[in-house]
Amino acid sequence: MEKRVIDPEKRKQVQRTTTRAVIGITLVIVAYVAYAMITKNLNIFIFEAMLMTFVAAYVILNDFVEPYRLGIFEGMTVGQKEGFIKILVLDAVGIGAVLYWILGMGNAENVNNSIFPLLIYIISAQWKRKFRPEFEGTDGEEQEEKEES
Image (tube, rainbow, N blue to C red; front, side, top):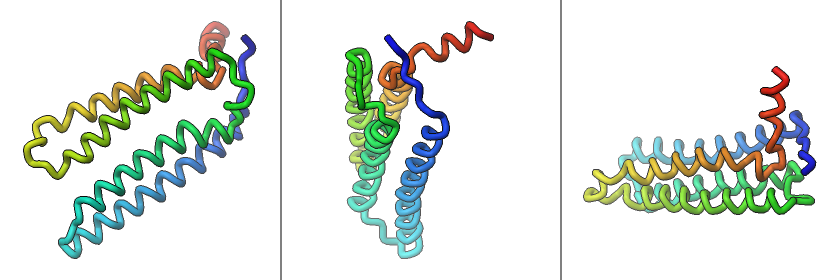
């Protein structure tokens, strides 16, 4: 299988754009929280909706928009498709856990169980990182660099 080479400069440019978008969404949430603290009027439904929008936007930007802009979806091999499906499954598990946590924030009975969904998200995010090179088609680059050293 021929490895895909992704231009490092293009990758940096695309990642900068994604980072700016995520920072923009984060600033909107921080502004709402600041407003809520000043007015002492936090609408938990609006806050939860903003957090869920953040999670969804982050995943869409990171797992769909970035690869599309880098041209990863073009000419995908079977192995890359399998890697992408693994990432999507882990996304579903991680997002489900985070959304469960967000929806349970306002529930006083859920305080003791609040760490478990976050742990599930962290574990799924770590596993996703393992499958990213398989999806991008850059699977062997790290091993070759280690062998050359």
